[in-house]
Length: 387
Ligand code: SF4
Image (cartoon, rainbow, N blue to C red; front, top):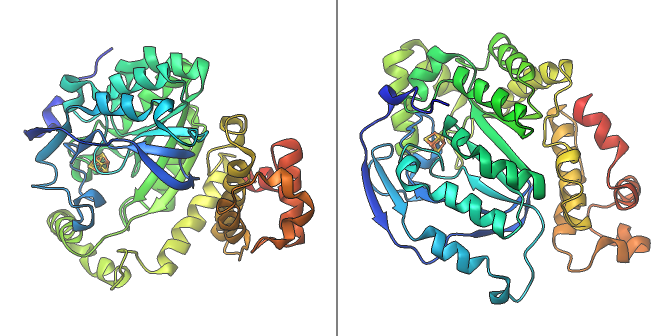
């Protein structure tokens, strides 16, 4: 196995080791994009230095020069071991995947070769019996196939990779420290061969560069060829400040003609969002292509229905339905219903006769929830998911 194929793209970085008081982040409700109830950042800052990374935004308060300064949470394993001790908790741990990666630093960035914090975390999560969802852009994840397989056999593991497209040349410009898309695809093929479920987060597509029907089509087709289990799609945000300035500088050097197009779609927005019309058009493109290949546009139930509590299962399915309907330009009450369920303390099955008292739950939604409680799934959802 060769994990050093992109060494020439790896930046020199300043590593700072720190000790932290906490690692595990508990989410207010299950995160239905990743199916995680807990997440963590073992590193802060990222050597991968993607030009569009929103970790660069002031909002996340990553110190130093993003891409050049990386903080390593040197005592992470010790702290995590303490946090995962059930004797220290008043309420039991929630069922759901523990998310490793994402956030403000890839858990398999080059520093991981030396520190092995991610590898040790996986061993600990295996010991403590948690399912794991890894999100990365790095092929270094292959190093840990032994422990990922053990987690998968006992509790389930998903490895997801983020892509902005499968074009290696474009990736060299916008993802200068990351293994090429072709290498990531080969890693997916390898992991699938080992029996591991793999997802693609086609996120973000870069406006006017990787969002053409042709390139989205190539990306979905190649993902399909290597056996991807699902593709989650999303457009790019550009938050005012460091993130936007950095991105536009690189754009100016490489695609100067596009500056005006960007000014047209990225106007004043607190979240750095582009205009709705733009997102609407790329979602439509992706939706059409994904349906052609029958690729689920969310993590499919087979990967979570035996893991989640009945309330979380209902929340996830309703939020997925909400998303899929909105992708088709339709209105949906399901997100609101999911939010109401997330506020409940009691299991849904104890309130079967009173579901319509919940905000956002009408007759149709009640029918969907009852089907989920009875069968662990929803036929309406199944139809929407793959078309
Ligand atoms: S790999 Fe992820 S966290 Fe790292 S720079 Fe790229 S987008 Fe940001």
